Image (cartoon, rainbow, N blue to C red; front, top):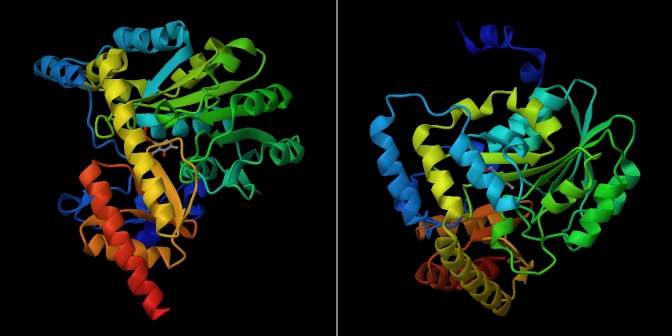
Length: 368
Ligand SMILES: Cc1ncc(COP(=O)(O)O)c(C=O)c1O
């Protein structure tokens, strides 16, 4: 069969789905083995040694199915947030949980609302379920415009997505503003808060929505979490959603947790308990983030304050050209939404990046 013939067999939503906005899905063949990783917001400082140990211990018994009740992992996660295990649903990365939210909640005709630029996986999910996407302009400071979002909610609005702190901008919304939004949102609108990067924050008011979720049981609030970033386990593939048990029960029916392997469950359970390694990662990331922000500002870039492990910046030259030239020098960074994004790495890589950025900006401005 040729591609056109197969296309006629596809479900309508996939056949008509617009091209994904996810940069990583469109990258093609990049030989990452030869590049320093500063483009995908990975945690170069690695996973907890205790998680590695747990993988070694679990791996020889991988001939057996994983515990599908996920007792140990769910208990470890629940304890971390002062919850019970009924609030936790897991999957292969928070990407899997994003898909599950579409499966569980979105029908054709429903509307998903978000601000752009943000992490666009939820847009793919909505489109796969025939839902429409309403995009609200971000504020000038590149923060989600929650006031505007509230005003734009109609009877069609089924889900709102807020990434906090946001990818790719690194910006965040303080907990008081978030709480007001959560309280004001109608009870029949699912509120999704993607907190993939929140563990890297150091601003006192950059806080998880989980406490609001506990306090507002009448609101369908879902906090999305991942082991890919702060816990340095992007390749292990574990993410989870925290929500009231009435919601988690339905999310669990989407089947994501059967994909989480024995080794991944063991690693994640060990990682979330290892506070010492967490403190080490936090310290390294804040140090690298402060350094990059200061040096990029000194080079004349516009730099957005970040509470994540990456920085969004405008070097006032073509961002795609910056990405390309940086790659030629051996460093992979991202270009999106008309700007660049660089992930925090080891200090020597951050220093090298700054040196190359100065050269690239100089060369591009000379030819402008
Ligand atoms: C905001 C945000 N949410 C979710 C994800 C998905 O992460 P994973 O599927 O690895 O948990 C990412 C990945 O970059 C992200 O930036």
